Length: 129
Image (cartoon, rainbow, N blue to C red):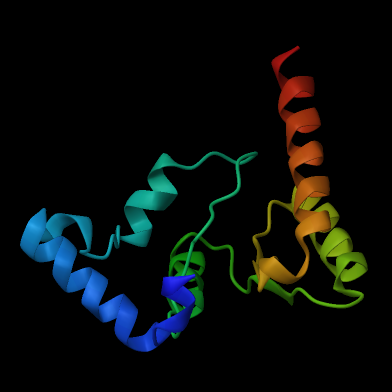
């Protein structure tokens, strides 16, 4: 395809410029809600997801909020081969203690993400009964 024949690094910049010129810059502006407002809208049985661009890392911001909310230190698991077991343990502990668990590199554990969705759906359904 034509897009694959173009240099990816320049294509992104060119497309951003095109969208800015032809449509409106609001379509290419990054969305960066303050973590405090994200936390205020969250619930204890609903995960907060951050879709990140390369180089972005909200971990220190999450840790700062966790300190303010007396949830520090947060448990962190970098997903990858075999990390599902550790993530499962830390999440189970988090359900009991109310601690926060940060799963990083979730694209490396998509099957586990589906498992988490099932967990949360069951927990939410159980609480609604």
